[in-house]
Length: 69
Image (cartoon, rainbow, N blue to C red; front, side):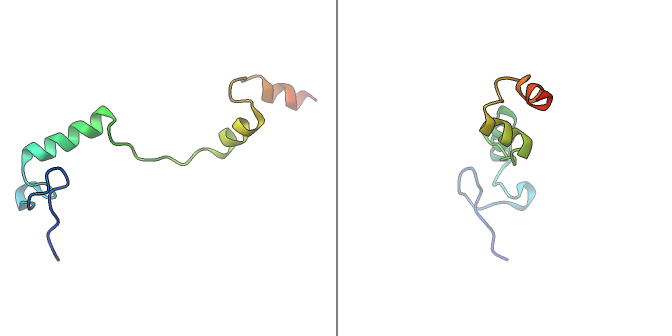
């Protein structure tokens, strides 16, 4: 298995801080996650996507009115 470089600075990773080269780079990465710089994409809810298509996202009562018809 080949060692990957540190994802923050590109230096060789060290075993005690893997996958980073140091605690400093690990802390930088953690700060980026906590500040929202990194984000995991989420799958959009199908019902929310459908409401957007129908133009109901800004009108929460639109779905109720549609059901009353």
